[in-house]
Length: 138
Image (tube, rainbow, N blue to C red; front, side, top):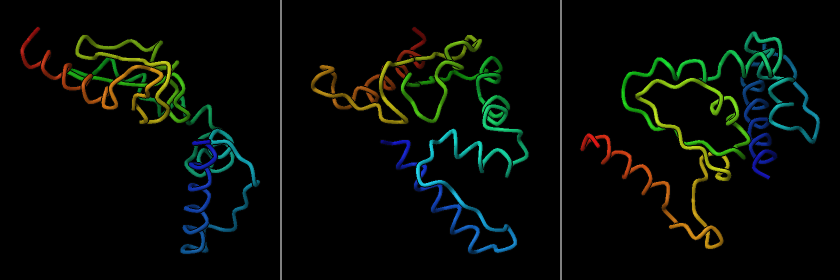
């Protein structure tokens, strides 16, 4: 559901952009389009990439996390429709990074539910505990 909503917003943004700058040319999108399809059709070629796979590979932060020198907490959900959690799970992290992968959470949707028996603000609690741990040196 998020994928379709997000792609719908992207398509509207692109249409407005092309109306504002007619020199960009006409652009047409199929009615049903996944985010990866959008990136294959528009984002990648528009930005100089071969395709969505090339775009994702070259723009992924996974290759950079080994260079992070400041304490960093990276929270990602395996069901995120935007961020490829598998690439993060396979990445080599510096000792300054802590990765938390959750099975669910979508794209920045880390809110608990009664079924999960989690606090509504479990992400806030996780971040606060991590910050306290880092600032207290434990």
